[in-house]
Image (cartoon, rainbow, N blue to C red; front, side, top):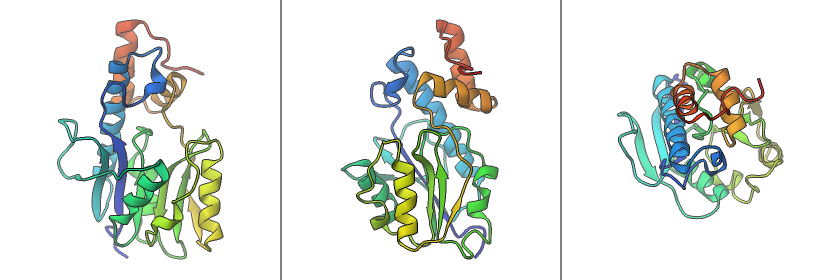
Length: 221
């Protein structure tokens, strides 16, 4: 396979106040949470644009805005639970696909590289990126099969384990990417910004913290 055989998928919500990153409020206002979401999505799309891929597709709940860079296809999310929406995202693909979310602004092309390399799918049927909270931040399938996601309970501490078990129970050979922390809470935001200080997300968090006296940045460090 060539380095450009894999489709990169990003599943995301339009960064509107009250619809995204609601667990950041408090201490952040809904408007500030939306700013952080937009920054996180911008970092994610930037990493996707810089990585080798056959296609780059944003599977979006909402409408594109000025935050959307050129070079990204946009398809609408389907209705239903998260498992249905993830399944449908893979349904737009032919050939290998790697899906990430908008909650990990610390991702880089280098971090994604093992799943996009020329030999990524040799003796491998799936890539799995576990999240610190028990979910997962990345899922790659050599042959996208929506049935591998439908019915997996989402947003639970055991979601990642259940999804990975679904893959292995289907007889797939799974390789793992490094675990990452999703940005869900203010503490998460501080940890991720500290780990990736050169991101738009970190700059936005620093600006908001300085302007409003928030203390979340660097939380846990």
